[in-house]
Image 1 (cartoon, rainbow, N blue to C red):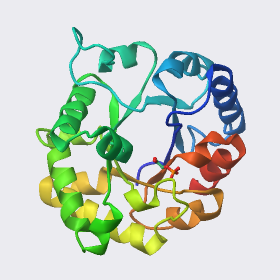
Image 2 (image 1 turned 90 degrees about the vertical axis):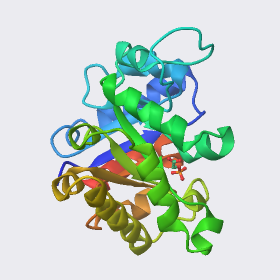
Image 3 (image 1 turned 60 degrees about the vertical axis):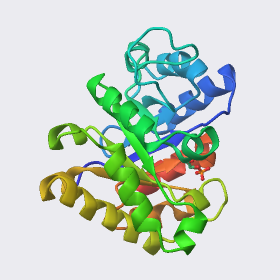
Length: 253
Ligand code: PGA
């Protein structure tokens, strides 16, 4: 299995000074473990990406964006391309986060264009998938995940798909304090891995990284990470507190 991967999604939070301070504290606190045993990334808001990437330049903590546009340049007011993100030192980009799907209204088709453009632009996309509470209660979880995975990864070869990290984030667990139990998470992670085997092959399924996200905290990180198919964690709220995020990184090792 690959190194565990812990990513912090700051969402629309922090300011320029607070963001740099947070990044520096994470870099400093994770000095010993990052790079050797765990891959760590932070995803600040667009406007602070350059400053945070600069602050982290000498560290092993990578920087990711929370979104991007699929076109490379041109008349797309307000949008940011993969090459711009690369240019300021980004390695990762979140694609299809549930807030973008359900608040902003992004479709599977749009998300797929972003994933494909990220890979061809040399970024490592983190494709977020996950069901709504009503979908879980209607036993639609596997159907929703299958749709999001097949549409989200359309057009990517087995070789290219390994640039993608999948993040399973049940929408009912995001920002709610209601984490999926380790068994619930493992069950869906196992389903996703089997789906990747069906879409690609066993080797690809074994190698692809699948993160869990949704109310991850220092107190539940180790239990989640103990599950066979959970390769890392995507952390929202708790990644805004350096001590909590560092404790989660430690628990993931
Ligand atoms: P949360 O968010 O940890 O605050 O639940 C996770 C996410 O949205 O990636």
